[in-house]
Length: 375
Ligand SMILES: Cc1ncc(C[n+]2csc(CCOP(=O)(O)OP(=O)(O)O)c2C)c(N)n1
Ligand SMILES: [Mg+2]
Image (cartoon, rainbow, N blue to C red; front, side, top):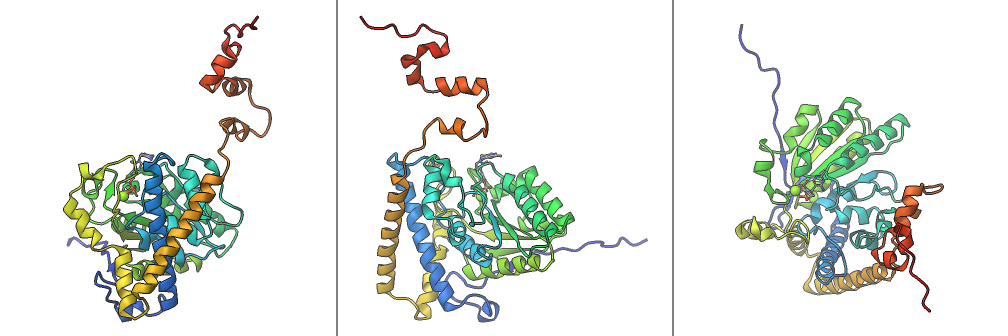
């Protein structure tokens, strides 16, 4: 009996705007208008400025660890813009700030979060975003659950979840993908393949040639896009989101991009990354590419660029001022905002003795003699 092929698979790669700023007009049809491109270029520039300033804030001790988005702005912009603000739900990790801003998260929230103030993760009412997820992979399950709720309630809404290449090695990823597919929920899995999971290169992280092909196992429509190409990211995201909205189930998008900065400010990528690789990707910088395109179309000028950069600096200065102007959270907050009712006795004791300085002041709290009265 002849051996039959029971399954064939292929992965398409979509690029619409190449590195030189040349657009494939046919593929670009019905994607972004000139006005939308200019708007998103401005937003990406402001975001890059925020990134640079956040890095300096950390270096000068004014902020905790920060993961730069630098180089990945087109992936966040194209996908975030494709989702409907106020309708769809974004379920992020930590390297897609611009998508969050496009959906209404005030910029200073992100700084607050990385300054260690959890109020930065207390998403304002009406902004459809879940908190930034630092544990790798957990958020994809939440996205599947949110999308399932949309389906059960018959709401035409979509959950878009973000994660990195490294996250696809987590069990949570596979569980979320399987459940989303089995239940045919309106969820878009958006992977930012930036080639590295801290110091682990993609080739060591996984043995599959593309990340996109992992979705084939779950029977999901899947595509690989040039993640530094705003048009390609937007088109693939919009198609996947609208398919989900109209009952077509989940999809997977692999956006091939690169983080131009360190993993976080706690990392020094020069220790494990070849500088030549970084230079190659710097030449594919999504901002540079988009500016070339706008210039080619006579939609941009040196003067506009200068004004935009000045404006970006002023905006970010204001954002930093707002974040730093908010009264610091009290250490007691962790106790006060965890329990609705009375704090259990053990936690009351912890609250009372948490600060080392309090030991000296009130040693009786930990069973020592109280400070004697002075004569
Ligand atoms: C569950 C869990 N395991 C490990 C870590 C430590 N960690 C933080 S970032 C990271 C790498 C993530 O790589 P990737 O998913 O590619 O995202 P990227 O940082 O490249 O955007 C790891 C292992 C974590 N935060 N959570
Ligand atoms: Mg990565």
